[in-house]
Amino acid sequence: MELEICNCSIHKPCRLCLGMASANTSWSEENFSCSICLDVFNNPVTTACGHNFCRTCITKFWDEQIQYKCPVCNKLFNTRPDLQVNTFLSELAAPFRTTVQVKEQLFVEQAEVPCDFCTGTQLKAVKSCLECFMSFCQTHLEPHQRVARLQKHRLVEPMDRLEDRMCKKHNILLELFCQTDQVCVCQFCTEGDHRSHPVVPLKEEYEVKTAQLGKMEAEVPQMIQERKQKIKEITDTVELSSKDADREIAIGGQVFTALIGCVEKCRDEFNQTVQEKLKSTEKQADDLIKELEQEIEDLTNRSSEVKRLSHTEDHLHFLQAFRSLKDPPPTRDWTTVEFRPPSYVGTLRRSLDQLEETLNMEMEKLREAAELKRVQQYEVDVTLDPDTAHPRLILSEDGKQVHDGGVEKTLPDNPKRFTRKIHVLTRQSFSSGRFYFEVQVKDKTQWYLGVVRESINRIGETKGTPKTGHWTLLFNKDGLFFKDNPAVRLPLRAELQKVGVFVDYDEGLVSFYDVEARVHIYSATGCTFSEPLYPFLCPGVHDDGGTNNSAPLIISPVNQTD
Image 1 (tube, rainbow, N blue to C red):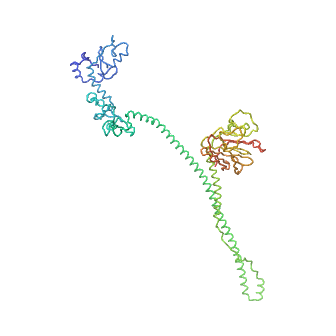
Image 2 (tube, helix red, strand yellow; image 1 turned 90 degrees about the vertical axis):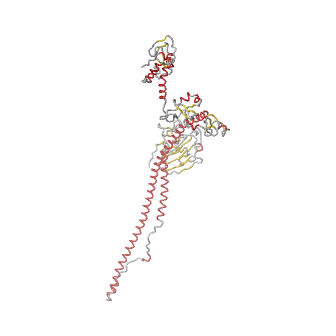
Image 3 (cartoon, rainbow, N blue to C red; image 1 turned 180 degrees about the vertical axis):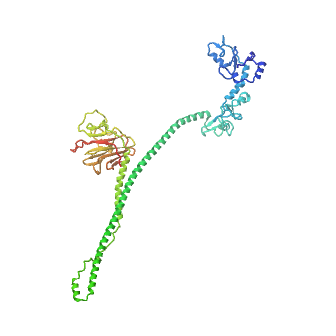
């Protein structure tokens, strides 16, 4: 309900009003609230119709209206009323306003400065006094706003740990910053130890440091991102290394299994050799023993006949029997017969020598096969670029095959096209890392392939060597060569079916492989690459000295077989 106030309240409350006010203890904040701002009256004024408003609220309300009327009862006034503060109502509302202000003060939270005077629950400080070295909430700050002596104290925004803001030597506020020693100092310090040092106000140094902090703040996310990227690179590298390790273990397992197979085979052959020697010795011994036993039997029989005849005393019978006595059986002169056990000395050494030779050959073969398998993982999908092909060349629709058509076609001029030699490049080029591709050369009597740099001469006669940007193999009736100055003749074990080309751009390495035989052909090392490299093919002319050479060069998919 609205408080009814007598007319005397406009100036000074009468005794009756004060008595009513003291007697009424049930008034609440709502009884003293402005109907415009809905807050406790601040400088309340009363209109002629008896309604009360904050002076600022009603003034602002009438400033925005064409007619002057009461916001509550809509009573119109001919002229804008001249309002006076209702001091009685103001005094009645003051306690409620103070209560509201106290309620509105936030309790101190983390990282805020508490009031040093509050007991129990501490309120948030609104000011700190540099004379008292204390901080005050709105309520406890009141003496500094009222008492003349305290009004001279220097009040600043709330500061925690005020004692730390004072110079330990001179006991006054640290308001300056020494740029030489990078420390906070007071005014007296500048007249002593820091006399010759450049000194600036804290605010000025704060702005400098804040700018530096802002730059650091902007740099930190980038640094974090860079480190996250580095973590990803390391993680990816570890993952790739793990895959490489698994692949290497698999390849190594195959190699060692094959080598163990060689050792086991050599062991079995060694055991067989020794066993065969033993069997031969045993057979020879058996044959000799049988022969000796037969002679013993024959001699025993003769001995019996002789002994029986020797006991005959009949002369006639003796002489007749003696003449019929059989001739002695033929016997060997055993004094000349020697039986020696076989010598095993050197058998193991010869077996190990053979094993070493076999292992060396097998290891080289397995090493080259493992190397080929390792580089095949860098396979790239490349297709031939018709814009670079010499007019005599015929390319397949998929860009994987090329052969000499025998007739020079009329084609649009293109600075990328070869006009002198029947060469062609791929669409793809490579400027870093590793790559590998395979070309089928089966049934051809001449071909030329490898990699070249982008800037090679395409319109004139140029000797294709590493110096001119060519790293290539050449095959013709004279054999297989790596094109250099002079050319390097290469051994040709059998007819080549498919050639593999591997490039490590960063290491400056170009290697060639016989894919079917799974052996290494040749490597150019220490190469210097400074521009894109292109796979390069030349199928040779169709009728190469009557040898036809019509088969195409074919860029083939890699088939990693064991």
